[in-house]
Image 1 (tube, rainbow, N blue to C red):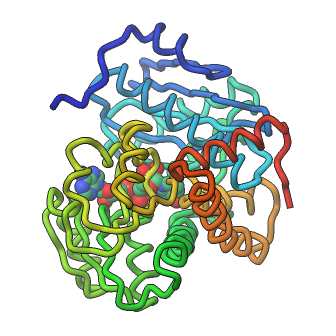
Image 2: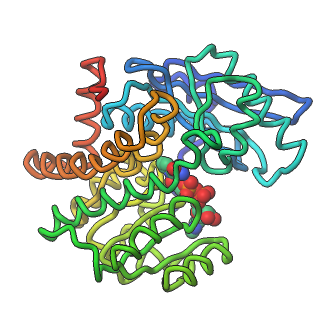
Length: 357
Ligand code: NAD
């Protein structure tokens, strides 16, 4: 079955979205093309990373920016942060290096600067903390810089581990992960650190990545069992941890799933909302992605809000409580967890203020 959404004119796509602002920009001198999507600034400036990706079409890039920025609004609201949601994408080959890379990222920085603080960026898939130093040369509206809050991935992974423990407690009455089999899709920044966290908890790991060197590293360092990318969905595991790209819970993968819990770092894990409903029907416990992976943005609060390390870590620990609360309230209301998470985030948004602690 063709899972691709029907083709739409870009302006129609933006008109249908509920975003405050979507801006497109190009800089022919540096071969830069980018989109900044500001979904909401109700709770504060729109915060969300920069994704650098070789999109198949401008429409695909637009859909990604729209969906990811909306997810950031919900993530920040439910984490109780005084931020709205935004995201930017750079369209192109993220393997570009040297002066060409610096020129692209500086162009992106000028684009961000033109929004006068409405949007604050950080690293995301395809960009690094080192890239943010180039962005910083053009704008101060950037976080995740080296020597400041730095790479958010270890903190994101810690938060995902806490979310996994909360889901285990909800499902099995114990948050002990020792001896549990966890299948990790993606051994990149967050997947690597999640494997490390889980190994320390005594979990048994099954891992995959399209990049063979990354799989090998995790296999060697943490004794994980590698499988082919297409085998990860049907892996014989207690928990499935999506830590690569979005849309991986879909019509094709749902029938393959064997795990009782899904908790991972990836954004937009559900292909569509209905796939979250299907997880509920299958009896699979799903920790909504933007609740589980909030550790990265919480880490950014060290830089954005001047939080100390202890305050940051205790806020990441609290992801456990948020996941438990979402799962138990969803069960009580008889609705899937992703819908309960949206409901709680929307309540925060309508209050118009975050509980910044
Ligand atoms: P990354 O680019 O470092 O790692 C992603 C990995 O997934 C790469 O190694 C890539 O080769 C692999 N991959 C891509 N397609 C794959 C496939 N089909 N099968 C198997 N592996 C595949 O990115 P990351 O920083 O680890 O982020 C992963 C996800 O987590 C993204 O969706 C990102 O938006 C989300 N996220 C990351 C953070 C963070 O702190 N880095 C925070 C919140 C959310």
